[in-house]
Amino acid sequence: MYQYRTLRNGIKVVAEKINYLKSISIGVWIGNGSRYENADVNGISHFIEHMLFKGTEKRSAAQIAGEIDAIGGQIDAFTSREYTCFCTKTLDYHADIALDILSDMLFNPRLNKDDMALERQVIGEEIRMYEDSPEDLVYDLSSYAIWGDTPMGRPILGTYESLDRITPEAMRGYMNSHYTGANTIISVAGNFDDNLFDLLEEYFGSHSLVTSKPQMPEAKYLSGNNMIRRKDIEQVQLVASFKGIDVMDESVYSLLVFNNVFGSGMSSRLFQNVRENRGLVYSISAGHSAYIGTGAFDISAGMSVKSLREVAKLVSEEINIIKRDKLTESEINTAKEQLKGSYILSSESTGARMQGAGRSLLLGKPIYTQEETLKKIDAVNSDSVAEIIDRVLDSSTLSVSAVGPLDSVENLFDLE
Image (cartoon, rainbow, N blue to C red; front, side, top):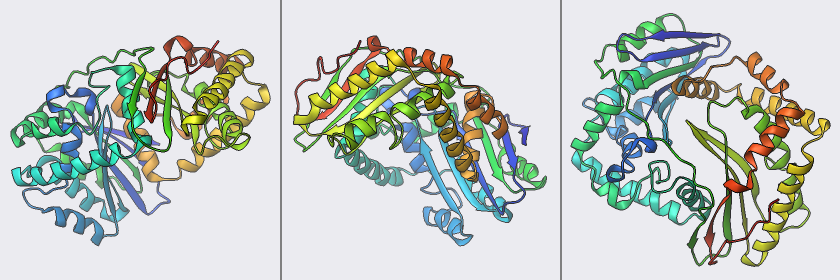
């Protein structure tokens, strides 16, 4: 059962008490990611995430890490296109220490010029790591292909040039306008008592914050905008993108059922036909990314250049077959059982439950109980699956991106 509070500075809280556990996961979610950035400060959201670990007015970076390690806890953070999360997992009776550290990082970051110079080098190495990983690079290329030179299309990490332009003053100004009371939520899952809400007021609610929310730019999906990054490597990394559904669309359960059969996991049609039966790839899969007002359904694979055309032909055939014949009742029922099993197993983690509730509250989505979610999956039927297949696998929205030793991806897929 979820409990909701609003702290006196506007921060919203969702907490799920699981009293048979001895642990607690806490996440501070900021409605800010690379989608909010202009080109001059591309990467600032991710840069801020790094800098909050570099020390505060009363803790060094080593002390932040040491205090969490001393209680056997974990601390982490991640930045996406639409949000940033700072999170901990500790024993339940150490919740006050976790809240103290998280609030100190959020409200009292040092943002020292010398620290920023060092961390800029670290992020530079992270960018180089992505540049050297074709599997990661092709997704950045795909984002640029389908959203163009916009905040949604630019890399979350930023560029060497944009990072060089970010100063401590720019970072503080950005935090003041984006890390606001109306744009921050706290999600908790695990064992706690009523004292938790007093601690939240003490560590978070007592700070004065701007009450407004930053404006999120629209993200128009671009069709047919193929992209190539030529690299002298052994494989071609390929992503075929279709226009997907947005984060508020309840058709997601039908999409998950469809993709469970089509491209998710080792039993999927793509994996069985292209890898297991033909041996043409090591990895091939399909997945969906949903955002506010937009989304993308991606089919990705890695193969030798000589196998590229054959793999594209086989993928085209699988797309055409599933669009024409849809799924059988047996396939739908099996997929639903697989989804329910995966969902229940993942929900046994306090971290996963904290993330699910936190992301939903931040994005304005309903927070469903386990029973409600299982009912949503059970409600999927052949009509809803057929509808989402036709919506998502619309060949008019196809964009193709590739990294490797090739010059063209034109006319690669033959879709009906």
